[in-house]
Every structure is written in C-alpha cells, then in structure tokens.
Image (tube, helix red, strand yellow):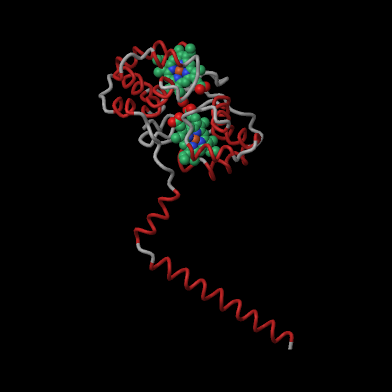
Length: 242
Ligand code: HEC
Ligand code: HEC
C-alpha cells in the first residue's frame, strides 16, 4: 500500500516535471525575438561613457610622425618602444588601443584618475591633435620586451576567474576592445595589473567601470592575485593592435 502511494507520487512528480519542461520550451519558442534580444542585452554591460574631449580627439586624423616625436618625452618613464617597467611602476603602453590611451589621458587631466607622476605629462599635451597623434603612435608600436609576471602559484584558479568574470569585456586573450573603451591587458606587467585591480576594488580609481568594480569587489586578496597573474601571462600582444 505504502509502495503504491510512493509510486503514485513519483509518477505525479515526473509528470509535473515533464509538463514544466514542455511549458518552458514552448514559452521560449513563443517568446518574440525582440524579448529574446532584450534578455541578451541585459547581460551586455552598459557602454563606457567618455567626455566630449575624447569624442572630439577621436574624430581627428592622427599624424603618426608627430606622435613619434611627442612620444620621446613619454619614454623617460614608459621606456623606448613603450614596454614600461617589469616592476609595474610604469605600465606598458605599446599596442594599447588609441581609444583607451585618449580616454586615460583626459581622465588624468579631468581628475577622474589620479597619479602625480603621470598628471604633468597628460597636461603637457597642449592640443587634442597632440593627444590624437601620440595615441595613434602608441597603438602602432609593438615591443618584444618580456613583461613582469606573477608568482605562478595559482594559475588554474586565475584562469577560471578570468574566464568567468573578465572575458566578456577584456576578451579571451586580453585583447580588449578599442571602440568600446575596454583596455587591452595582454603583455601588461603583473604588479601594474594587480595595482589597478586593487585600486578599482578599493574605489581609488575614479574612472572605474561600474560593472567591473562590482566584480573585483567580490574577489578575495588571493583571487585578485591569481587573476592578475593569469592576465600577465596572456599572449597575443603583437596581434591584437586594433
Ligand atoms: C614621470 C613618469 C611618466 C612620464 C614621463 C609619462 N608617464 Fe604615463 N604613466 C606614468 C605612471 C606612473 C602611470 C601609471 C599610473 C597609475 O598607476 O595609475 C602612467 C600611465 C599612463 C597611461 C595609462 C595606461 C593604462 O594602461 O591605463 C597612459 C595612457 C600614459 N601613461 C600615457 C603617457 C604619455 C602619452 C606620456 C607622454 C606624453 C606619458 N605617459 C609620460 C608615468 C609617466
Ligand atoms: C563590464 C566590463 C568589464 C569587466 C567584466 C571587467 N573589466 Fe576590467 N576594465 C573595464 C573597463 C571599461 C576598464 C577601463 C576603465 C577606464 O576607462 O579607465 C577596465 C580596466 C581594467 C584594468 C586597468 C587597465 C589599465 O591599463 O589601466 C585592469 C587591470 C582590468 N580592467 C582587469 C580586469 C579583470 C582582472 C577583470 C575580471 C576580474 C575585469 N577587468 C573585468 C571593463 C571591464
């Protein structure tokens, strides 16, 4: 008798599950295409907002030769060829998207990002044309110099965190996306990556992306180190200039 009831309950349970499944499948099939797109869009982060100076600078035609000349002064810290320094004090610039470079220069100038070493040089570019020139030059250069990497002790964990949390914006190989203002991370020095991740998580980087901010705030110290280490080992720096 007890067995009989159990079987009955089981049967009802399965029947219920089956009906539920049918309903879900039909519902998604019936869902208008626009609604489906909306659901997808919800997962897409909102576009990065930039100041009018950035938009204007991007509309100019860059002069690479002049950019190379201007870059001379930048090499005092970012080094000839733009590899930065392996201790991460000075970030690698070579091959960075011009959109990202332009945005960062105006962010320093407009006080959204604070660094006392960099600020006077962001200010030294007297016109939007100069910013356009040096940014295009920076994107055009590449470097073979090895970058600073992390301790290599938690790379699997780092890879997992990166794939789950960072790929959607920074790309599989850290290539970023110039048009969307997602910086390229490939070839960047571990101590610089970690410093930025920490500054963003601690709310010290005023131009932080709000979606990224929430993500890195949810990471432990070990996780931030692991993902930064993984980032510092991403390859493909020389192929993802655009
Ligand atoms: C006195 C040293 C110094 C000089 C010279 C200098 N920079 Fe920097 N730059 C820095 C430092 C330090 C940082 C990192 C700031 C931080 O940690 O937030 C930086 C960061 C940057 C960034 C942001 C990179 C990123 O990935 O977000 C850009 C772009 C940049 N510099 C461009 C330039 C350009 C262009 C010049 C020349 C006109 C220049 N810098 C000259 C020290 C310097
Ligand atoms: C929603 C998109 C998004 C996600 C997801 C995201 N980021 Fe970012 N990230 C950005 C944007 C946009 C910037 C540049 C903000 C700005 O304009 O200064 C940035 C900047 C950075 C920088 C500083 C780069 C530089 O050159 O200064 C690092 C490092 C970084 N992200 C690492 C990560 C890591 C690691 C993860 C995953 C744990 C992650 N990001 C997830 C959008 C994102």
